[in-house]
Amino acid sequence: MKLLTKTFVVACVAVVATSTTLAAGPAAPATMSPLLGSWLLDTSRLPMPPDQRPKSVRFTFADAGSNKWATKVDIVYASGEEVHSVSKPGLDGTYVNLDSSPEADHVALTHPVPNVLVMALQQDGVLVSTRIYSVAPDGNNLVETVVYPGNDNTRVMRLNHFTRAL
Image (tube, rainbow, N blue to C red; front, side, top):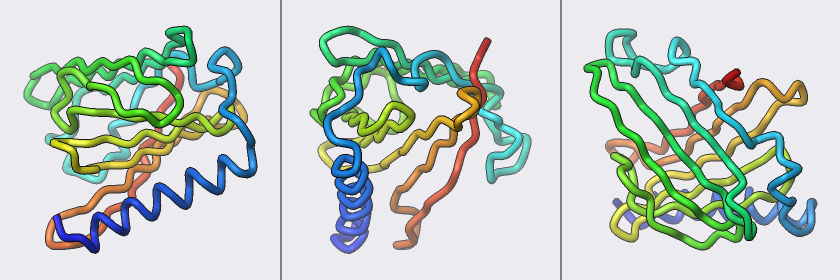
């Protein structure tokens, strides 16, 4: 990954995290967050051919106490292969191990306001993706903004849409 790409991704994270944190003050208590619970990805909106889309993706965020969240991501790929990733990061931006993820080996979270979560993913010490989760005012829809360096020195920013699992 070229230095320019790394710098761009880090700068995007810094701007979003700093501006949101300054406006909001300290991190919101986990018990107040509408992010807690399980969310299902609308795979029909993914920018890939339908036969390559995962069959399902479920994110679960739970309060783990001591200003930490338990995170779980369950993916069933088009081939039927399943992946179950788990972590228990604090909400202070400190990296922790991310178990069984195909994308990253470490994760860090910040929670600047009750309906927003910022996630940074690292692989082998390199930032590979930043995700910003925002819950809509209805409390039942969530948008994930994903930023990562793409192929051929292109930068990618895309939106993924989730609904609350019942």
